Length: 66
Image (cartoon, rainbow, N blue to C red; front, top):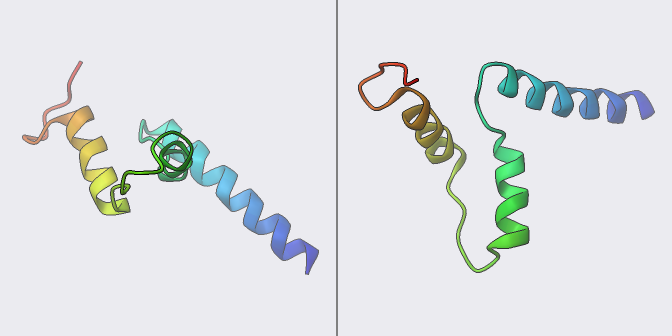
């Protein structure tokens, strides 16, 4: 059973690493931030969060921003 917990923790850490590697922010970090700093606001869904992240990095036309 302990190996399942360790595997789960490793997956969560690697997920954050790969998102940072490709330049996508972490949805988990966003949720932590919202709970801590904006408990009165409803956080974006995961889909909304990643659409906004893509648009801010690439724009809605798909062109890479500098």
